[in-house]
Length: 390
Image (cartoon, rainbow, N blue to C red; front, side):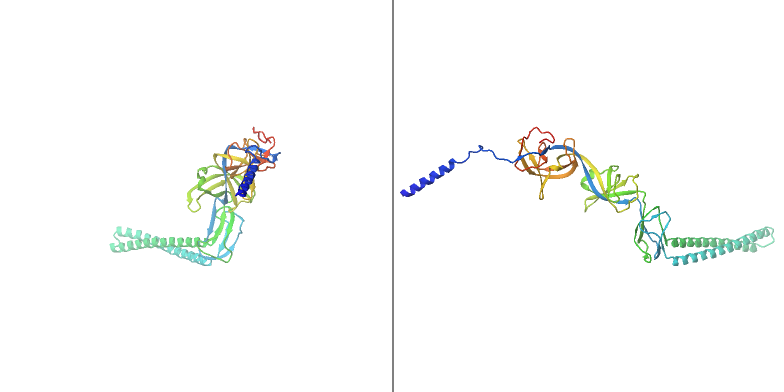
C-alpha cells in the first residue's frame, strides 16, 4: 500500500510539470511566408451586356431544288458543282425519244385537223351562197317551200360541221402544246442567275418525277440560320444588329435579324432565327452550308467580375488568392461564368474579366499577378486599396 501511494505522487508531479510548459492562448504569433512583388485588384459589381455566341449555318436566300416532271434516263449533264449559271441555261437533259414521237403525232394531228377545218369552211361558204340564191327564188315563188327547206337544212349542217371542225382543230393544237410541254420537261434549266450547289445524279441514271436532281442557289443574298435557346427569347428581336464571323472564307461582318420563328422545338427547346448578311459584303466564297458564328448582345445586368489573370486552376478546381485587410493571402475556390471585356472600374492588362458566380464578394481584393502563397502575408500591404498597388 505504501508503494502504491508513492507511485501516485510521482505521476501527479509529472502531470503538473508538463502542464506548466504549455503556451497560453494568443501569446505566440503564427509565422507566415512573406510575399512581395504581387499585383492586386479590387472586385466590384459591374453592369455588363451578355454576348451570346451561337453557331449557325450560311444559307442562300433563294435555293431551287430542281427535279424532273417525267421519267427517263439522263442523257447529259452540262454543269458541275460550283459553276455560275444564268437564268434559262441548260443544266441537264433527259432522253426525249418518247416525247419527241408524241410531239410528231400531235403535229400530224394538227395538220389533219387544219385540213378538215379548211374543207368545212369551204363547204360552209358554198352552202351559204346557195342558200342566199334559193332564198331569192323562194321569195319570187320560183321554187317550192320544200326545196327551200332542204337547202336551209344543208346550210345549218354545214355551219355545224364547221363548228365541229373548228373545235377539233383547237383540240389538236392543245394536244401539240401539251406534247411540246412534256418534251420541254426533258431539259432542266436554271430558274435564275446563281451557282450550282449540289448535283445528286450522274449521266445515265434514271430521273423520276419529284426526285431531286440538282440545286441552284441565288448568290446575291445570303443568310445565317441559327437555333437559339428558349431561355434568351427576350433578347432576340427582329431588326437587331448582329456580329457575324466565318472561318472559311475568313470574314467578320454585320447582319440583321429578319425572321424569328414562333415555333419552339419541344425536343431541343430552341427556335430558329434568320440573320441577313449585310448587302455590301462581297459574296465571293460564300455558299450554303458554311459554318458561321453569330454574336448577339443581351440585356444589361449586374455581375461580379475578377480579372482573368487572377484565376488560378488547381486540377479541376478554380480559385483566386484573396487578400484581407492585414495583407494575409488565402486561396478561395470560386465558380465562374461568362467572359467579359474589362471595365473602367476594373483595370485589367489582359482586357478580359471572368464573371464570378460564387466564392467572393463585392469589395474584396484579389492577387492578379506575381507569385502568391496560400497563408502568406504581403509585405508592407496598405489596406487603402489603389489599383495595381503592392
